[in-house]
Image 1 (spheres, rainbow, N blue to C red):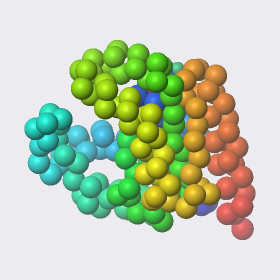
Image 2 (cartoon, helix red, strand yellow; image 1 turned 120 degrees about the horizontal axis):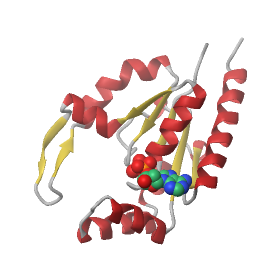
Image 3 (tube, protein in one colour; image 1 turned 90 degrees about the horizontal axis):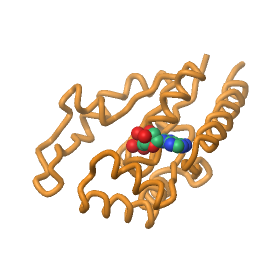
Image 4 (cartoon, rainbow, N blue to C red; image 1 turned 30 degrees about the horizontal axis):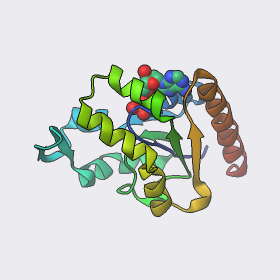
Length: 172
Ligand code: DAT
């Protein structure tokens, strides 16, 4: 059976992991968190002194994922989307949260003032939405609100329906 690949992107803290894991458990698709994958495989290319974090080796991440992505049925979660091959994804969701909601979530994570400010600005300027529109066909890019538990439930139901329809359309 053919299965679609789904990209979940958006500013850190918008709820990609929460949605991705729940969606995977309810759909049977496989969930991949690119941050975790990079950490486990040490897929890094240097260290960013200013942001005090390792720099992702995007080419190695793509190589690492290629086989699974060609098989299909993968949900990918990452706060960036311009380095994945466009052909990988059948649909792209950009999660969005209100500033005050996102601020609280990132504060709880213990982000420092600079990191907090930059991530909030990233959300205000819709950086990830613009990046998604520049990287994928406009008609497959969708914004999803991700402020409250009801949003999570709505998003899951909506995506499950989309998956079901995609499978129907691609069987035969
Ligand atoms: P991300 O993977 O985008 O960094 P996350 O899934 O770790 O984000 O979520 C960050 C926090 O927000 C976490 O404590 C769970 C909470 N959260 C996520 N989606 C939510 C929603 N729709 N309603 C309420 N809280 C949510």
